[in-house]
Length: 331
Image (tube, rainbow, N blue to C red):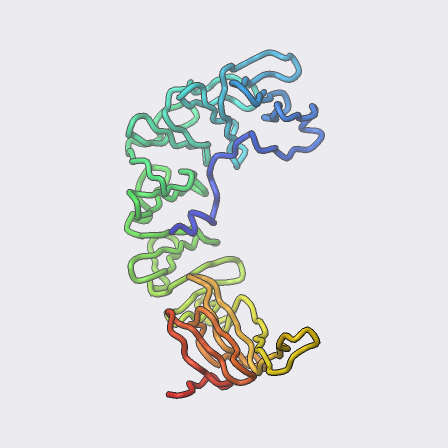
């Protein structure tokens, strides 16, 4: 269901130190082994394959934190590193290796924009670098949440199993949790989805495209929309049409001729039309001629060339025959 909270949108989940970090030779003065993971110039995580690990100073060899299970580094370079000790989670300083917020929480996430989400019992809330609550509001944990991370002052929140909204750093709803999907776009755009489809917001107050599209994406090149008839277009940011026709790819259609090769198998030939595909909501196909003119909407799950000029087009497990003009045969 999530696409965003898959993409990016901004991915803000744990970056486990068990996956090798990329550092320059100047930053990483020690050669990493399978058991050693870099935290900062002086601080490493000794992570044995069996048993618990520990945080230590590489230059003095002093153990700083023992019985460490997992370590998660923030993506924005925040100085506080999330770690587990037993069943609890806390934070230590990346440059000193000393505990700043003791392991107290049942769940904890990385710091982002100087705030981190933590959970104690059923109470999920945000804390600052001192371990104090950033605001009074609490939330319930949701498996659909994507890391509870702030970016440029805002955090996407999942409420229950199927609703999403956005909070600011005061815990206030900038976008109320009324949407079944929500994705952060470029330039302060937000893609939202309700029961009627996808729409687009600019900032947090203005809906500039209504929720009526079956798919939507946005990047620096413009706004990609997929209409109810599965056709795709790209819009400029002033909502004028930039590309009237958008597809994922074009492939030739082959059909089996009556001629046999030396091995006794039928020779394949190229049909008079190609198929084009669109992604978005789901992959579908349409007919397109060799001049690049679409002959049908991309509404078919499969297109099979019967001969040079006849095509079996399947839609919802029902097939129809079309000619090389996109017209129905045997109406």
